[in-house]
Length: 503
Image (cartoon, rainbow, N blue to C red; front, side, top):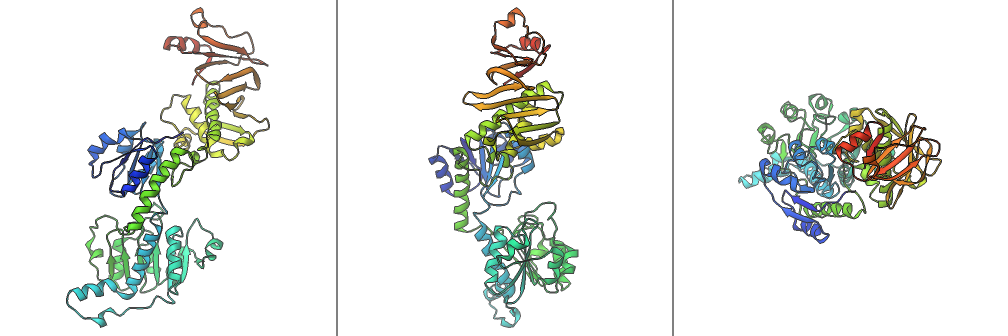
């Protein structure tokens, strides 16, 4: 259902990324350091764009490339530089490579913790300045200290295991992880409010979203132990920089290590220049190994999508993952076709039920998305696909539920209107309308005209009759006819008396 043929590499990335793509039949063009104006011209030429953190893929760019752009790939973890909401609205997959730089980010975090404990950067700088000031840099052991890890994803867990090896007591919090799951890794799951007063060191490993912005602020710092040390190798803005400097100056916070900042390069010099703060220029993923891994991974993910072997790292396309198998995709295509007929027969359907056969098990989300696409396509909506279906359903107030079918066929119903069918090599087959059987299989193709009137057969004008490819009475009442191409006037004439669906 998705095919990537041309990829724009918009940021510096290892050559192997390009090599993997081209080896697998994908044309990859590298054009880096482009201005917004240049990207507005370039991006609409490509099916996909791969970026690191330098290039910002904004709503304006996505809208300029809408209809052509299928995928935005981030060679790395954070997607702060991508407007994911705009991408979803326009049906564009956003894909990242969360595993590729996890180890490197975790190692830098551990380095930061140890550097805070022993004042390594400050002591090294004093040596370069010609000083020998051993007494100025008295440190502490991390053994026996309590480390709080806020965010227990890949990086957080890597940090926890490494620092536990130094003898630290590790407590942690993650809204998506159960206490039982982390207990197996030697971490004591602890509510946030209990973390603050317990921790000697706090490291954050969460995305920057509204719920985590300024997570560690003046109020939280006041609840922390005197001398607490804060580490942020995740995203700028999770720790309030001004509030932290205030706490450091007051002698409450004992130190901090920052690799990420609210503005990059940072403009708040009081933080960067503070003697108790260690700053690095966003080096979390800056290792040879991490750069190679994320480059390979994003290329391999694009190839996997093309080959239908998997959808990896996609942040907004769960409905797509289920239909990479072509046989399963046919059920979704059938749901789209049947939904278009339902929308033409029912007045603005809002509550829709999809019943699926056992062969379509596991496709719930994809069937819901496909049904929404069909319903809205029938209303003339454009730019719809499985990625933006959920968003559009919410806008239109459409609710779709799914349940197993007792008949072995796929059906879509809204109130008294129902249409059943099944996939075939020729396309979606329409087998019944409102429970009335179609006497022979009818493929949902071309222009289909339906009448649910149980009376006489559909009558067309002499001019239109010649274009009828097939016409049947439904067993139990109603009629269906299939046309080839009709011009605008002919469509208008037929639509006066019958439901018309163009596939």
